Image (cartoon, rainbow, N blue to C red; front, side, top):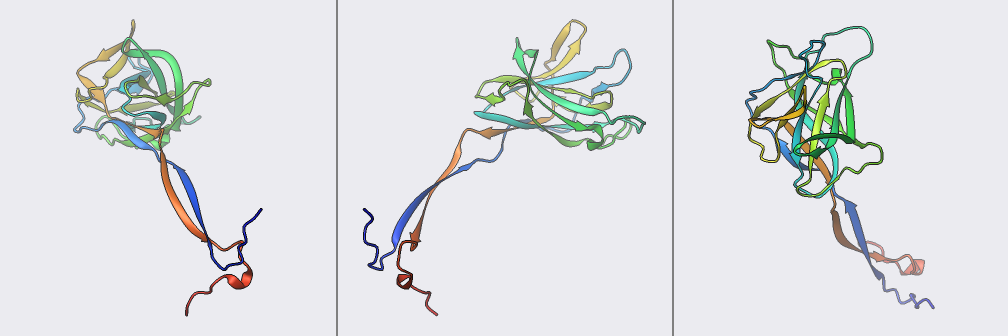
Length: 219
């Protein structure tokens, strides 16, 4: 049975709150000045259509988005706007395995315009979605590859020396992927941590009191 609440005493209600944490920077390589400026895309037989960076996760959580330091070498032309794509691949023997677990794409027009004589790199971000039901959940020590392609356009992803200990730049050679151990691309990765903001709150609840028992604020 309900207690008698007609004694004009408010009820102290304790409420527990759970809030999802925001994205957190996990791994990054942001050392400038850049030293390597490989172009991605183009029609030359020697053009690389994709390049990558091996990354080692440092926190537990779901990989949410990645950013790269890049610009576009694309000139205005008729037809569909090329999409620049960043895929997340699993790693085998320190190289991209070809198994894609996540992907994000942006129009090449979202990249700042640059040229071979006037560099203009900026950070551009790819929001990731899982592919084929795969999981983008990471745990500390998990290695994965960020692989970027230009979708028919031409872009430059900038890199510097070997300053990131969790992986290296990778290029597609005739025989398959190979590492560039002396270099790393500039990148940032963000995860949704497996933690929650947990706090307690309290309030005075007069909802079960007679209407004439609720005190009014003093004037």
